[in-house]
Amino acid sequence: MTDIAQISPAPVDDAVFAAAQVSKSWPFEEARKLVKRFPGGKRDAAGDLVPVLFETGYGPSGLPHIGTFQEVLRTTLVRRAYQAMTGGHPTRLVAFSDDMDGLRKVPDNVPNKDVLTANLGKPLSRIPDPFGTHDSFAAHNNASLREFLDRFGFDYEFVSSSDRYNSGAFDAALINVLRHYDAIQAIMLPTLREERRQTYSPVLPVSPSTGVVLQVAIEVVDAEAGIVRFADSDGSLVEQTVLGGQAKLQWKVDWAMRWVALGVDYEMCGKDLTDSHLQSGRIAHVLGGRRPEGLIYELFLDEKGEKISKSKGNGLTIEQWLDYGSEESLGFYLFREPKSAKSLHPGIIPRAVDEYWQFREKLATQPVEQQLGNPVWHLLRANGYHGGDGDKLPVTYGLLLNLVGVLGAGASREQVWSYLGNYVINADPAAHPALDTLVTCALAYNRDFVAPTLQRRAPLANEAAALTALDAALAGMTADAGAEAFQTVVYEVGKEPDFGFESLRDWFKALYETLLGSSAGPRMGSFIALYGLANTRALIAEALAGA
View 1 (tube, rainbow, N blue to C red):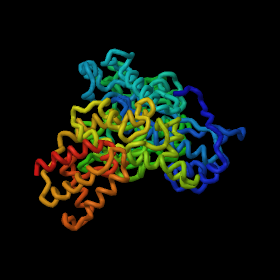
View 2 (cartoon, helix red, strand yellow):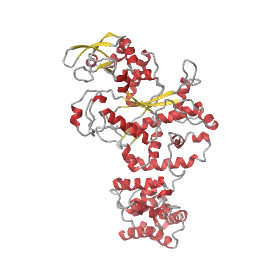
View 3 (cartoon, rainbow, N blue to C red):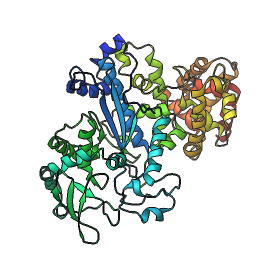
View 4 (tube, one colour):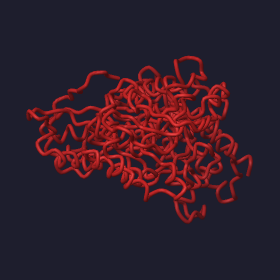
């Protein structure tokens, strides 16, 4: 994390600069909106270049999650693309915490819930921390956000809503809202149900008696002085300033005010905020500003295609992803097709891991024009994002999972590395840290998802005959014959017409189901080389015994 106001990016290579002008990769398409917004760069009244401001928002009523990560990552990718397109124009990224929001309900995943229950409705920054580690509930979750973002090396500036309101930094913006109170109401009231219209106000005063953020109608008494009149919780009529943290704004108005007050140029949001984005843009115009550029991205779905809900618990946390896959694979998965709904469940992790490394291996041989369309090019430039050791993984994650699946739920890291010695040069975890990370992930993934479902079936008569022939062929080979030689033998056996396979696919499926207990599997030559010739023949013997 950095506290400086302006990030100075590395100089942009001429070839990258030229390719960026025509790249169709989505971060460049998004960055192109900013280039069009600021021809010649964003400049102040004196004509000097000033940073383009990117923003991401965070609601600290809960802990950071995978949605928080994807928004900061994707925004960072657009930021880096803009820098490439402009030859390194300055930028800033603000992570904004809306911690003046009133607590609406008590989260399920916190201790001492009675502490929060007793303070419902109060600003998150004025509620005791149920974890007992910080000055407030918001401070605890804000610290978690900063730790979370720092963990992944993001360059950002943290801005707290409560700090801005309480310090008076938003006072001028609040007065501006009061000046345009009627115009804002004209935008918002037609979008509300009749009963909501009766009490709706763009400004939410904080009760002087209870400290609760009130959802009540107000009367503007003196816009320039920031004075309003409203009915307090006990029904008494109160005249009070909205300045200095004694009020906050309704969500859509607050979003628009923040854009104008901070000078936000780019902010993306989920599809569920489409209407908010539209109305906030109209309000920003009324306040004398301009809606920032941005991407409206699709939401995550579970494995049944249903929208992910925190209350249902049908999602996938970032901690779970990192239990079963790498940081790079998560970034890779979130990079692709942000305007398409994405499934988010454990089953997509292995493929994401292997596809990341496939794209990474391609990168070095691609011309720069193709590199800019490669997700890994973008990820490697997002705050020093990197994969660990080299541009090629010596063993695919899918193959690693097959090995661990055969070894069983009780397999250890040391045991897996002993088998990797059959296949990997210098099979030392210290020499292959990225692979070592995936060994740990594979053991966890196998334990939780693979081992409980594996079930080897007995081979049919023709399959048993083919397995017998394969075993005889392998008996004439040496352990160091290599994956390609083993693969050739497997092919030759499967092509034999006497065994009755309609296609090689049927032969491979039989191998997977009888030897590995799964309907899909690895390239068998690679598996034999990894698992070992003698061990593979033992697997075949077990399958034939079951026949």
